Length: 113
Image (cartoon, rainbow, N blue to C red; front, side, top):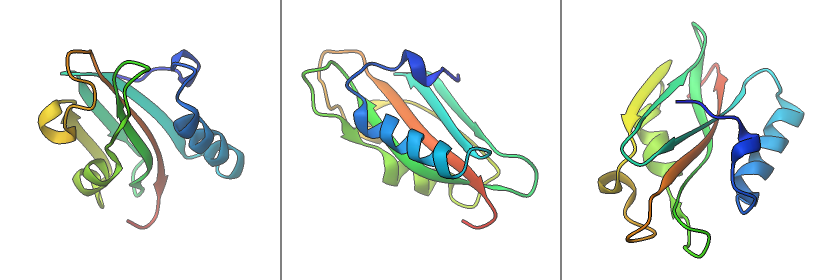
């Protein structure tokens, strides 16, 4: 499920900064994806390109500290042209117990890993 970054909560300064910088330098291969807890994420690149994760955060309520998800997503999608996985606490921990969470990913498509 893809969502526009304009719909992201205002407190996602880090992810938005990464997206802005990525789009400023490499506008043709920066993508933003978000998915709610228990939804499936689909990352895709064109033929011959590989997914490169720039940032990933797993967030709950504004008062909660976001969970670091970049390492897990990068490992899961390493050297792949497409990558699919479910957003779940078992992968990212539970950064905000009792609240609904959402995963935000900024990625690009490159020639390498």
